[in-house]
Length: 91
Length: 379
Image (cartoon, rainbow over the protein chains, first blue to last red):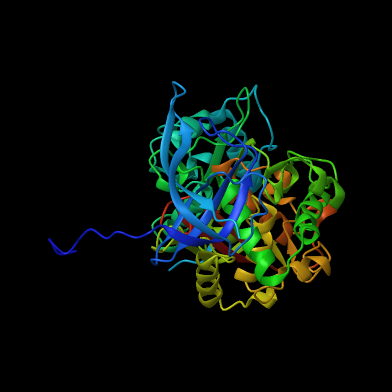
């Protein structure tokens, strides 16, 4: 890649679920159950991330989501680590 | 180029082996392979060992136990395809005429107090978001269900079939049969995959002896010919891609069929990478055993049974035998070797003449997976 060809690009973080799963047996640092999804962003790229505030909702492929910043896991000391997650938009 | 043959095979029982140290597991497998081949250990010219987590200089530590030292020994890692990568490397050395007798081995000791998943790869972006291996396959399953109407029952049939086969194989981790209802009712790991939809975490080792055409027929009346031995890596994809098929397996299969001149219809017995039930279904399609989207119907019709069109994982597969990462790819070759020689006992595929072994390894962000090994063997 040539130097100076990258630039900032701001997108609104909305997209739709391409595939998802609820993980019941997680790993150290992740509170189970959590929902993980592949999201195809309206801006083009795809992203794998957790869903936020998803419990009690009927998740389905094609469902619209929006990007939020929220806790995704805990470090060894038990502190929450925040990162990108996707919030299902209620129809 | 020399034709390359398998002339001996050995493996330990798979499953928890708390009392046996991992290099000792490897020694047991290598010694069985050596004995079955009739090769003098002093005649071994090189060795390749595959493992993912077992530390430095593995082959040297294992082989010195049978008095083999000083020769070139190479230790390779490609996650779940580590064993297949050792085989590929050993095959290359013999095929190129640089050695006539080479050992390929694989071993892994994964069980530990407390159990749990394999260690997560902390420097991998998707893993850091919570993408554990079962969740990746769970999402593939959701897509396959959505796109082709594949049912939970059809997915469960993979576990039922492989446990039924495994009940005939005393070397398996699991030795009992299960039903579709058992699979569906077992605890959810990553929806829709239940505990019985996943392979267990196991210890074990396996080894094969490869020989070139100058010596193979002097060693045994029944050498098994390696017609093609292929290794490919995942190609770069955009971030965050999950598919309902394995491009890498499709590519490896096409290459192996092309090199061997053997089409998928001719495969009698296949040892296939089935860490999760959905993986086996998807790979039927990738390997050309059925058309895209038809794998659910394929297993439902019994085509993958020991007496079906292509016997898939008569050994019990990863699902039943267990999946000690480095050992898996070599254990597959052991099973194909025994099947093609007619030595597989109660799980023998009648009249098997063409065998195929397939593994996929490694979860890497921006790649479908790390590596895929695919080998076609004939009598």
